[in-house]
Structures are given as C-alpha cells and as structure tokens.
Length: 132
Length: 132
DNA sequence: TCCTCACATCGATATATGTCGATCGGTTTC
DNA sequence: GAAACCGATCGACATATATCGATGTGAGGA
Image (cartoon, rainbow over all chains, first blue to last red; front, side, top):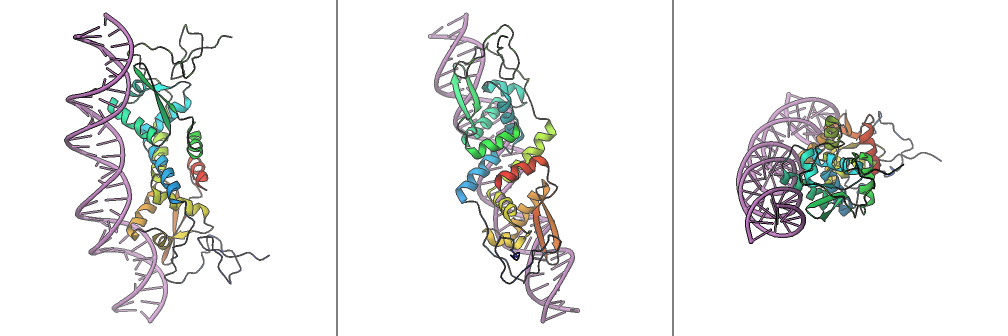
C-alpha cells in the first residue's frame, strides 16, 4: 500500500506518492490557500476558550489550585487574606470562575464557601486535573 | 487512630476530632481568615497562566487544534483563508502563540510555516493533548 | 530592474479586563 | 434594635487586547 501525501489539512494530494518530511516542505503553487480545515465546532470552541480564559489569570489559577488541594470549601475572606487584593476583586474573580462552571458557592451563615464544581464538564475536569 | 479536623488549608485544627462533611461546615470564629495556603510557585503560576491566556481566544484555540490535527506545518495564508480575519490579525495571533512557546515558525521561500513546538514544556504539552 | 506576493510591523481604535473605593444586603451578636 | 461582620454589586479608572488599515521587508518571477 503506497503512502499518500496529505496537505496541511489532512487532505490527500492526488498524484503524490511520498510523504514529505518537515524539513522538505512540498512545493506549493501561488495562491494555494484553502479555507478547508478541521475545526472545533463553534460553540464547543467558545466554551473551551472561556474556560482557558478563566484560568488565564494568575490569581484565578492559584484559586483553582488551592481549591483542588483543599479538603474543605474555602470562604472569600480566606482568599482575601491569601492574595494581596481587595475583597471586591476577590469576589470578582470568584464570579468569573463560577460563570464558566469551574466552582460552586454555598452560603453558610455569615460566610460563603466555594469549592470545585462537582458537576464540572469533563473537559474542564481534565484541565483542572493538570493543576492538581 | 482518631481522624483529625483540618481547615480549608489542610492545617490540623487542634482539639477537633471529627472530619466535617461539606454540608456540615465547621464553626469559625469571626475574623479567622488565614493567609496560609498551598500556592503554586509564582513564576510557574505566571507561565502556566500565560499559556492558558494564549488558549483563551477562540481563534488561537482553533489554530492550535488545527496544528495538532495537521500532519504538516501550516502557513499564514492557510489560516487567513480559514478564519474570517485579516492577515495582520492572524499574524498577531501566531505571534502570541509563539511567545508562550506553543508553536515554532520556519521560513521556507515565500511562506512561513508554523507547527506545534516540538520542545514545548511538559505542562503545555499536556494541555495541548487535551485539544487533540 | 521592477513588480508581485507572503508576511511582519506600526499606529489607531474599540472593547474587555483587573483593580479599587464606596455602598448595599443579609446574618450574627450584643 | 444597634452594631459588627461577610460578601456582592456598582461606578470609575488604568491597562490589556483584538482588530483593522497602512506600510515595511524580503523572496521570486517577469
């Protein structure tokens, strides 16, 4: 069975018989650009990007790490003490994490405790597992 | 061996003998907030957050997915055709991905080809693997 | 030599984001 | 009921970011 040449989009190039190595990039004719490509479905990509964006802030990343390590929910005042940031800022970051479904919050008397969302999406769970 | 009560930071609470469940959060005294917590080392957290931030844009996430699926490097004009964005914008996104070490670029005649960085950091590699 | 093409860079602009101070609502304690 | 405390929300501000048009650069082709 002869190997087939595929282009950058995994499409078979008719007539080609060898698979070029990275250091021998195949010749292209000018204006060869093609709009066809494997794409993540739009909504999935947006949701995934939103999760990454939520983790793209050092403070929020630390928060998720702490929650992943903790054996109990953590309250806002704990985070306020742990990070050199004001309480409204901490609250803002927690809201961001809640919006993308990474954490859930539970009011208990005076305090609001936060924990990793037990019903987190599988994709999110895999990412968080990398931080543990 | 008696079970020990630990607080949100995994510190043992002296005198307590039971491990509270999530629905029975232990009493706290007012103003109890503690700054102690497991933290990711600063530089590591910053680097990790930078990678997540790079992936926190739908276009860049699609780019990484395409590169992970592709069997050959992809040139800028391919991305320009695939996304409804101008060429400077595509170039900007590729530069962002290059800055955090997710991709490398190689000039070949007229075209500049891009591929996933073979020397990507282990952490980055794990994240990218999730997108494949 | 001059033109064309692919890509990078620059400047500008609109939007998003992180942070703070001030304030408000709800709960516990006195 | 008043005071103290925790946390959310609002408005403001500075910075970061995504995007575009215009221009620069370097390689090939006519």
